Length: 216
Image 1 (cartoon, rainbow, N blue to C red):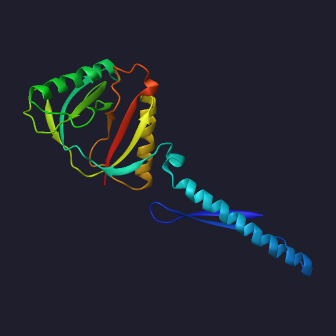
Image 2 (cartoon, helix red, strand yellow; image 1 turned 30 degrees about the vertical axis):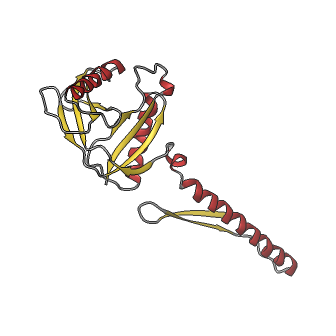
Image 3 (tube, rainbow, N blue to C red; image 1 turned 60 degrees about the vertical axis):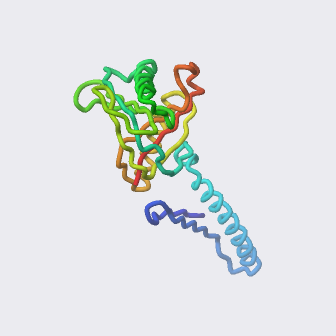
């Protein structure tokens, strides 16, 4: 008979107590056999617990994605936003991205990383509001259609997702769980970096998207 007890230890750890009992005996031969059996059992338990610890230290085994902590690298974002009655189509997103790229080119600015996007329910009305952004190498003049946002170069939680949008959505849920598990805070909204141009690649199973969550 054995009993396993899991005890929380700090914000990101647990302690595991695994207790096993063997029947006693007044027979010295049986008692010796029980001692040897208990030693073998203890070795097996330690091996299992060691494997279990290594398993849990890999984020993909716990959250389903390889989650990494890092630092933000892009401090200047050229952005625009738009509202749609439902989640925007790929074509609608890339139409806005193209407008950012055109304006950046007109201002002799260079993109420093792939375009970003974030869609969420519109709190001021029906539908969804989507913000797209282009990391650029210098500050540009703002217009009625385009704004400049400064990104704080702080910590982030990130993962790379290969597959269609529903895989990206799953990564978002996993990362929210991670943030809750580790009692982290988010100073800004999370976003998707569209590594693969989804217009040029029709097979959504090949899309690569890097998801970033600003954290502290």
